[in-house]
Length: 212
Image 1: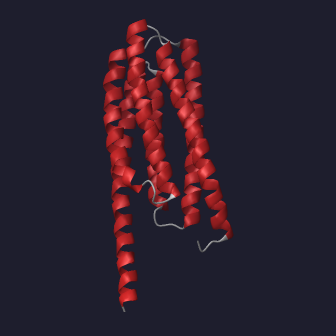
Image 2: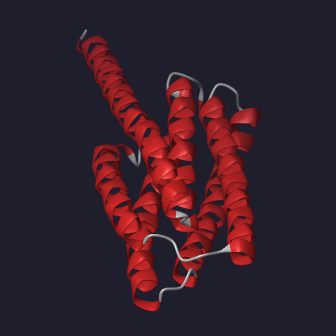
Image 3: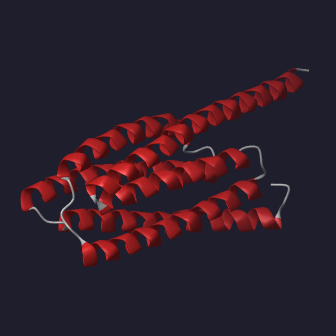
C-alpha cells in the first residue's frame, strides 16, 4: 500500500514539475517574442548589425520555446529530436548573422551608439529574467538543457552589444558593431554544435530502445 502511495506521490510531483516548466516556458516565450520586435526595430533604426543579430537570437529562442513546449509531454526520443531541431535552427541563425555581417562590411556606416546602449540594456534585463526562471530546470532533460544554453548565450550577446556601443561612440566606426555581431554568430555556431553533439547520442539510444 505504501509503495502505491509512494508511486502516486512521485506521479503528482512529476506532474507538478511539468506544469511549472510549462508556465515558465510560456513566460519566457512571451518575453522573447516581444523583445524580438522591439530590438529588431531598434537595430534597423540604429543601423546596428549587433542589435539585429541579437534580435534574431530572441526570435530563435521564441521558436525554440514553442518547440520545447510541444516536446514537454513527449517521449525521450521526441525530446532529443527536439533538441536536434534546435541545434539545426541555431546553426541557420548563425549563418544568417554571418550574412548580415557581410552586408555591413560592404555597406557599413557607424550605428547609433545611444540606441545600442538603451536597447542592449533592455534586452540584457529581459534575458537575465528569463535565465533566472529557466536555470532550475537545466538538469531535467536534454531539451531543457539546450533551452538554458540558448538563454545563457543571449546574456553574453547582450553584454557584447553594450560593449560595442561604447566602441562605436569612442571610435566613430562601424567595426565594433561588426565585431560583436561576429561574436554572436560564433556563439550561435558553437551552441549549435554543442546541442547537436549532446542530443544525437540520446536520440540514437531512444531509437534503439523506444520504451526509454
